[in-house]
Image (cartoon, helix red, strand yellow):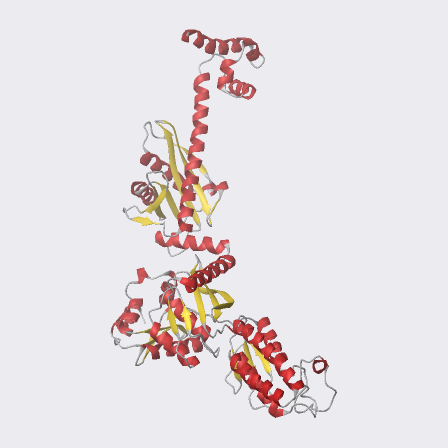
Length: 612
């Protein structure tokens, strides 16, 4: 379908809640979204495309058709959206989980002696799955710890096939297993009971288990079975410690989770702190693949749903910095998955507010740590390209500046930045040749004309053309550059670099007079400031050097017998014109012929005599 056809179809949608699926020309679902009013939400994609961020623009450009599914409420839309995202894994949706980072614990059903195993994903089978958990190593250790605390077997023997065939392994002798492999062992019924106890730990319900074990211990003590009572006491201690640790590994907290989001220059990150009874149990941080331009509310809603789904328990309270638009529906979805009410709230003061700042700091540190300098630079260049109206990041940037003192020694500089870094071997200097009076605009017109003509003539020193030209100045400077390009039949994006009253970079300016603010992006502001300072420095340095040479020539001009070679010899010997002026005749004669040395001496000492 064409974009006009897509727009027309969107405008014909109903205002009811629902879910929409965007598909490419191959029929693959590339984005799934929900809406309170389908018509309003979907039509936005195909109308004001200029206001979209780069990710949305890319997604819309690949949409060939879309489908919608009507539902009765925002809650149903949220549930359906989540289900469709899991099924299709669209590349433009925010996807939290990955197979390596979030493993599951699998418990086989139907077996006489089921075992816990670590798997990368859930399957459509009869097994029971717990997770996703925090990491593969931590999850493997958790399985071993749970089985050790409940004295369940972890060896390679198969039950009931291998019961009674061999002597018990080392785990039985060191107290990590109760010897289910022996004919006089605890038996299948006890094995099943302990498996259910292990399930309680994996789902975060260890307190219920410790209560049951406590009652068993008391009954054993009353029956004077002190050996069993002591064993149960040790198991209660192990389960209590393990249960709290396991809550952190699983990201499950009985009380409160505090979420901090951080928008980096390139991507988002989150930090979550787990609390129980006001005590901080641990933290988890992760950097998302979602781009920094994503909406914070959309990020939070998607991450919370995916993070808690399938974990078996959700905290009663989740603290966040800002509430998502679909708060009520989200709370209902989370509550449905855990069987109790879940509240999202924004803490304003006290311990919760401090913990929220801590979570945000954790998210910031991790996001900045994993974001490379190259990624930051590329993102900054993308932002600059968007301001310049480019469809891509400007890899090569050229900047120009004029420097003069009155009408004397007018010069211009061209500096080059490639991939955000100065490329000094490509810097160029220009002398203004056609002007007798200072005129920055005319000088810039001359310089750009010469530079562009050198490119058209095939001069490798002036190839290739830049992706973007930055002029040290405002609207008129940018207009002059565009005029020079048009005269040569070339097209390059142009922006002016505007300074404030203190001669500091303030903004960018188009040739049409539109001022483009850059202070909202510190990296972009820094880059433009660096370019402006560099081109100004290069122009000033060249101007001063040229002006110094002119001053030398003017003081030594007109002296009989003193040509360019002898002037250089004098400056090499004495270091400056002032030292030459103060030199004695004998010192000059050591460098120059006597007649020429006398002429030089008379020039300066004669001037001093006249001054007196």
